[in-house]
Structures are given as structure tokens and as C-alpha cells.
Amino acid sequence: MRAVRFKEYGGPQVLENVEIDKPVPKGHELLIEIHAVGVNYADTARREGQYVVPTPLPFVPGAEVAGTVVETGEKASHIKPGTRVVTLIESGGYAEYALADGRFIIPLEDHLDFQQAAALPLQGLSAYHILKTMGRMQEGETVLVHAAGGGVGTIAVQLARLFGAGKVIATASSEDKLELARQLGADVAVNYTEEDWEKQVLEATDGKGVDVALEMAGGEVFHKTMKCLAVFGRLVIYGVASGEPSKFYPSNLMGKNQSVIGFFLPQIMRRPDLLKPSLQELFTYLSQGSLKLTIGDVFPLQEAAQVHDLLQSRKTKGKLLLKP
Image (tube, rainbow, N blue to C red):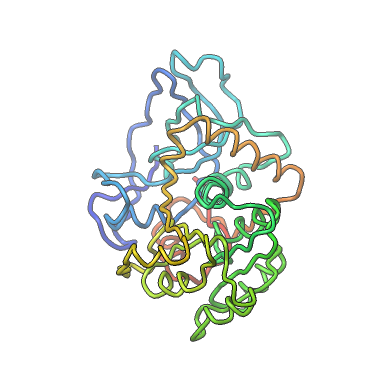
């Protein structure tokens, strides 16, 4: 089968198009013929050797896939070949076929296409659990969403609204991304490339600060976001896209009873009690039309290197997908 993998860490150029053996499902595993796979910052971190956990070499990236079951392991015979499914996997999505654990798949309703399905799980679950599980967001609270024109950001703005936020403040790097955030439900939109953007956030809260902040840039953005936190505010870190370290003194949290919380989606993926109900809830929102997905573009699998370059340029909006 065709696949994209890397044998060394580095830039997008280390991604190579190869022919490898099609995997064989065992136990609870399913073999899925992939129709769409999501492209994520986690994939670029894997490629650069900067992921939260070690990345073995050679490696086929790709964590969220949608497709059709073509074969099952001996303990997954209750799932019939031909079933349309979406799921998250540890690796292997940049390929024509991939293995998935049958205990974690979600069957797709007929009206949802594969591209919609592949655009939701990773960013949707991240936004959901950053807000609810880690950020402990309550109705009426103020939420700050950075990179609101991106995959997690576009969903987080909408979920904050659905979860009853009193005010949603979105930041982005361009006017078209800010306008997208407004269309998705943001009450206030701030350009974070402007100096002293944090003052605009504080002004929007009458100086009180935000209750929950989603932060994935690191460096200066982290420190400015800390200045935006209210008393009892929670800042959830889910990435370090800038690559800049953040010198942090925990004692600074004491004066206002603030929290800095880390989020890593694979820990949610290892908890069926957290994963499946939240993923089903997200697909219900999608089916009802209360959650809209912003798909930036769909590219052929063999153009994965160019897609990584596009993603890291920060010039894209919404979700990028590959199609084998």
C-alpha cells in the first residue's frame, strides 16, 4: 500500500512517499481503508522529534482517520466489513490502510461524509476536554481562545458558546481569521500580532480577566495570557507552537488562586469513559448543525510534505486533510 513516512527527524522534506506492507488486524483491531486523514500540529511535532512522547523511527504519522472497515481481528467480529467509521489512532494514518482498535471506533451516520468525520476527532476532542475536563468551564464564565482561526480554535469558540460561556474572546493573526471567529460566535476578536493585545483582552472583561484560557503558542504569548487570567482563572496549555520556552514561577499563581494545567489528548484516548461519550456528543452537535467545521483544503496523500509546510506557515484557516 502507499504511505508517507519519515526515517529521520527534520523539516517537511523528510516525509517520503513509500510502498509498505498492508497491516493485518489481530485481536480487537480493525483494518480500515482510509478515505480521509486529518493533518495536525502533533504530526509536525512528531516529524521534528519534538512530540510529548518519543517517536520511534521509521514512523508513519496520522492520528485521525475516517474510512471503511475491510477486515477485522478475531475479537472484533461484531463489527462488519463495510461499516463506515471514524477513530483516533496512535500512528499510521498517512496511508491507504491503517489499523485501529475496534473498541474506540465511532460508526458514521449516513449523512456525514468522510472529510467531515476526519476533521472533527482530534481538534474536537481537544477543544471539548480543554474546556470541560481540564478547564472546568462553568456557565457564564469568560473564555479566551487563542489561534481562533485554526482547527482547535474554530471548534473551541463554538463549544464555549454551546457550553454556556458568558463571553468568548478570540485572538488570531489576521482580519479574515478574526472575522471567521466572530461568525462562529466570538463576542470579542483581538489581533495578537498587535503590541499590548493583552490590554485589549482585559478591557473586554472590565479588568477582571478571563476564567479559562486556551494556550498553545508558548513563550511571550504564555506570559501575556497569564496577565489576562482572573481570580481563580485556569490556563490550559495544549502545545508550544512557537518553540519558545516559558520561564514560569509557580508561586506567581498563589495571589489569585490561579491554575496552569497541561493537556495531552492521548491520555484521554486511553480512557474509554472519557473518549467515547465526548466524541459521540461532538458528532451529535455536528449532526444537529450546532457545530460547524471549517475545512481549509483537501490534498492528495503524496503532497503531505507541502501540507506540513502550509500548516506551519500559519497562513491557513480551518482543518487541512489528506486523501489517499
